[in-house]
Image (tube, rainbow, N blue to C red; front, top):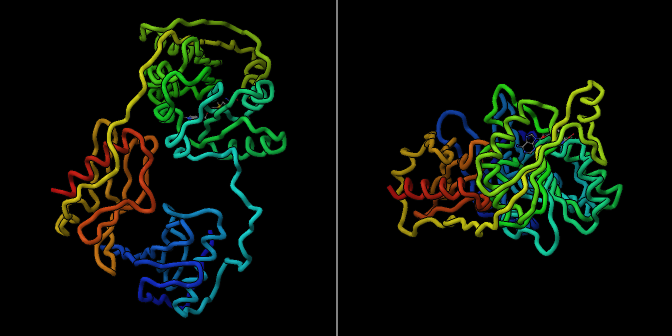
Length: 391
Ligand SMILES: C[S@@+](CC[C@H](N)C(=O)[O-])C[C@H]1O[C@@H](n2cnc3c(N)ncnc32)[C@H](O)[C@@H]1O
């Protein structure tokens, strides 16, 4: 992580501009443990840089929640602040190399906002959940060049490996997303997928509630699959196979197929391992028979116009509000030197919480650095927050 060790930290008068970087305001944590966040703008990006004391050292680095990428941005803005404040740099791991214009983020790697804002359409779409080594995903994409494949994974090394292969093999019909499959289906329009592959999911025999496949996943799979669309589970776990059969039996509008030890065109690392151990492999495929209505997510992230008074802050500070849809946690609070206050929030679903800031200045609230992802737990957390802010 890029950082500067300064001889001493000089808070400067804000707002202030240094070249192409603007510093807007400074927020300092309330309570004993002090850190200051400096709101920073570079072109159309907003984020915080962070000052904190580490023993006797004054460190300037990026804030984890709002950290921009590539790293060049962090380095560039840290050096801009040091220059602006006339600070002496004692030590640094920051080089002064310019922006590498060739260093682009990988085209295939998408953010969840990409899907939430404008889900792809106009071609057949298949989804693979937990693609692991990506052997199956790559094989399918190569053999079906007209189909768009969306690969979901939460294991970063697997994502990097898949992106590398996508580049080497020059594939343009795969989109990769680092996101929990149990939450992703919410962003998928109804009747839009032809297949959902779930191959060798973690069995979670002792914690079945953590399995990818469960009642709400199956309901969402039925909604998002087109008619005759297939949810394909392949597993070596007898427990998972029985569990899936039972789960698939609940919804009225589906049929399903079961196969034992059926060969498919490509085997994954897991499959090779289980076959060597002479384990049985089960396929349980749900076939959707239902045309589903479009899912409408009610609400937005607008705050009520009526002014928010400063007496609200103590009622929020460090409070955790748990609800059946998820939670809202005011993790830390800050005073803004130029007027107003700020709260670091975690909110939304327990499985994939959103981390961001709430800024209140002149009685008006806004999220920083951007709005939460438009998911139903986030919209509900926003409603709760808006209610709390207005007493
Ligand atoms: C046992 S591996 C199987 C990988 C691959 N499908 C195969 O057959 O080799 C399960 C994979 O699912 C991923 N995974 C687990 N839970 C997930 C979730 N909720 N959403 C997306 N991926 C998940 C894990 O990171 C892991 O890579």
